[in-house]
Length: 399
Image 1 (cartoon, rainbow, N blue to C red):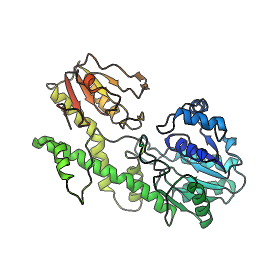
Image 2: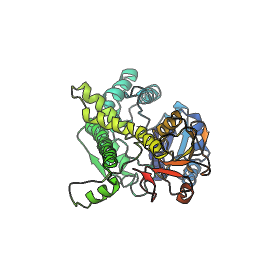
Image 3: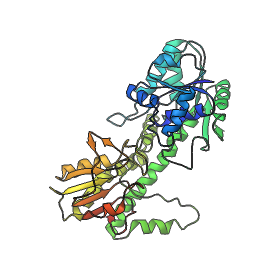
Image 4: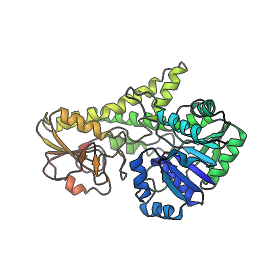
C-alpha cells in the first residue's frame, strides 16, 4: 500500500520506517524542512531507527521524505502523527492536528483511510479531524484512532510487540486500519470507539504522572524524617501483590507524562468534574526542580552564589537524547537565579538552548538529573558536592 505519515518526529518516523520495512511504500511528510533534509541524507533523530536502517529504506525507495504537501497525494492510508503540546497556560494545543487535517482536506480528492496516532482528548478524531476534513472537502473518508505507544530507547517493547489499541468511526474504517497495522504489529486490541482508545492513552500516562508525583512527595517526607526513601521503596516492593514501584526524580519529561494528564484534566473540567488529583500531581512534579535546588543550596552551606555547578544529564530519560519537557531546564534556571555559575554535561546532547555540553572538571558541585550509561561516574565524583536525583551514585546526597 502507499502510505503517508504526517509528522516525522519520534512517533511518525518510527511508524513510517516500520511500515516501509514490511514493504509498504511510505511517504514521510513534515513541514520542518531541516528535519526533512536530515532524514533525506540518512540521519535519524530517533533511538531505535538507526542511520544505516534509514539509509537502506531510502535506497530501496520504500521510504521517501518530503516537505511538499502534494507528496501525500495518491496514498491509500494517511497517518497523523504530529505533536499535541500544551500552550503557555497549559491548555491543549491542537494546532498541529488541525494543520494536518487541512493538508488532507486540500490534497486528498477521493476517500482514503485516515488514522490518528497523535495523543489527544476523547473526541479528537471525531470532532477535530473527521468533522473538519469533511467540512472543508465534502469527502467521506474512513477514520480510525490508534494512539501511539512509542517509548524512545526501549529495546524490549517495540512497535511490533507492543499491544496496539485500535478503534474506527465505522466498521469499514476499523477493518482497513486492522489490515494495515497487522502487517507490522503482533497484537491489535480493538475497542468499541475512538473515544475509548483516546481516553485509554491519556489514562496510561496520567497513571504514571500521579504515581511519580506520589513518590516525589514521599521522597520529601522521607528526607524530612531522616529516612532513606529508596530503601523504603525497595522494602515496599517486596510485597508480591498490590504494589508497583516508582522512583523519585527531578520531575517528569518527554512529550507524554508532563502533557497528557493536562488533556484529560481539561476535558474532565468541561464535563463538570474537577480533576483535583491530576492537578495536584502536576503541581508536585513541576515543583521538584525547586525542591532539588533548595537541597543543593543547603548542601553547599546555604548558598550557591558564584559557585561553579555542573548539571549532569539534560535529556529527560537515561540513554536517549530527547530534551522535551526535561526538568533539567528548570534546575539550571533556578540555580542561575540563585547566583550559581552553571554549565551542563550530556554526551548524548550536542547542543541545547543555544549552549554546548561541557566537561566534567573544575566544579564546586554537580547535580545529576539523568545518568546515561555513557557518563563516567568517576568523573562526576571529582566534583566536591554531588546531589544525585537518580539514586545511582553511592555516597552522594540526593533523593
